Amino acid sequence: MARQEPLLSIVLAGGEGKRLMPLTADRAKPAVPFGGAYRLVDFVLSNLVNASMTKVAVLTQYKSHSLDKHITTTWRLSTLTGNYITPVPAQQRLGPRWYTGSADAILQNFNLIQDENPKHVLVFGADHVYRMDPQQMFDFHLEIKAGITIAAIRVKRSEASEFGVIELAEDGITVKAFHEKPSDPPAMPGNPEYSLVSMGNYIFRREEMEEALILDSEDLDSRHDIGGNIIPMMVAQGRAFAYDFTNNIVPGETERDKGYWRDVGSIDAYYDAHMDLVSIHPIFNLYNREWPLLTNPPSLPPAKFSENGSAVDSIVGAGSIIAGGRMERSVASFDVLLGTNALVQGSVLMPSVRVGQNAIIRNAILDKNVVVEPGAQVGVDHEKDRQRFTISDGGIVVVGKGVTITAH
Image (cartoon, rainbow, N blue to C red):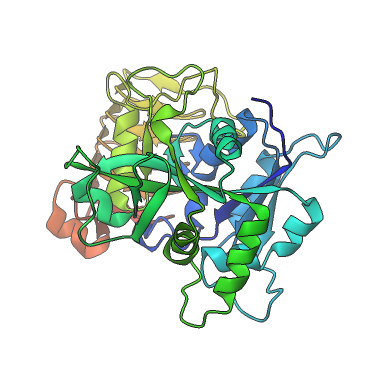
């Protein structure tokens, strides 16, 4: 179905990402590097651009400099036909305050909507790893004449308390109840091990969205959150519907990576998503050329392997030099150096990491510009690591940006 009615896309990219500390100590969550070449925001923007949804406002807030710079230097579209992707910092149009929630973020940017004058507004999050054709969701939204359409995915019931959980009416698409991060998530009918949860991606009919946001802004007890306040309001009106993500067909997908979606909001989830990339048959395929993941790679030479350096089941970015070291089940971003007899196993190395000779890195995440001196170890002795670094619940050692790790 061809797009029939004007649409504006808004990407919510203002989250602090506290559970990703220290990776978010100096950058916004959507600006965190991922997969050796990308930033988290690249996934949602790639999905929108591949679907020709090219009027996009990215709402930023906390520690947004690197995110703003990435968007303005990477995501430049032709303006001849009115296309744009633009970062929009918190402008305090309604008073001297930050956004108090996702609903308030949109309310404070009503001017963007009025200027573009769309009939529908797409609101997507900026910190998930997935492929999706949002045009198919929009077609569904138009067909059923929804007030709000919520992208929904099945997750294990034991994990569903981290999300907004959807209960459907008998027709299978109308949302009859919405529970924001419930302690006892309701199961799907006939499938007791799974719950249906919100992916944090929505499409609104503009008039109904504006009405709901204004009503919510007048409620002094509201948290002004889309999931916690706006969706329940529209559910009560019978105007909320669920779009089943399993029905989304992305060109070039395989049975193995179909329906892949990861919320990488915690260190362990972020690490696990990287390990998905380097499995023998990757659960998430970076190499699908029919629905490409877009970014602006640095102008660096290809990766080089010398002095019997090797990388097994790993991703190695441009400009990296594996000089006599060995990498196993790891993701190395661009401009990484691995010295003689160094060993990196099950780890994520961000841009410009330096690992000296005879160093050992296991089950760790090293942020940008970390220097591991010759003979130093990370992830070998957790008691020593805990005195200097962050260790996640799953035992992943995280070293913050620019840290030098000594051997003693």
